Amino acid sequence: MSTGNVWIRSTGGANSVPTVRYQTEAGAAALNAGELCKLKAAGSPYVIAFVDADLTRGTDSQFVGLAATTSTHTAGANGVVDVYMPLPGIVYEAKAKTAASVDTQAEIDALVGDRKIIDVTGGVHTVDEAAADAVANALTIVGGNPVTKTLYFTVAPVANAVDGA
Image 1 (cartoon, rainbow, N blue to C red):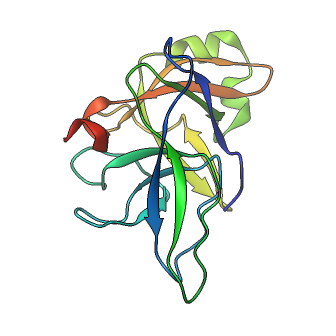
Image 2 (tube, rainbow, N blue to C red; image 1 turned 180 degrees about the vertical axis):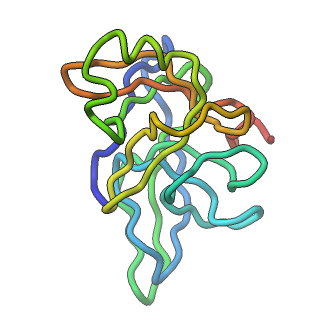
């Protein structure tokens, strides 16, 4: 996967976003800083990076936040990763899957309020702006930048591990 695919656009008024240290499993794919992550499975102590078509409520494991560091696990030993907590009000930013779909403010404005998913192609996390707007999709578009071809989004609180959903 690639480092720095996603970043925090706004902390929702907080001065900083706390991190939580999670375990990463020996032999798992690397989890890089700037990648959205979730629990490997319900009840698992391990976190993993999003895969293609994440994050859908009721289907995917709980969202735990944005990796602040790169995981330290190896092929033979478990490791750790520090993750920014998914606090209410945080706005994330990521490139759109298709840059031409968000290269004008009008195109971005038409996406505001739509619920989308993450696309992972070639190890890069992008917002799949072409995905159908669906109730189960946990990312909500709240804006964007046509110059950088990025979209701003929030994550539905019910997808977060911190709220016990």
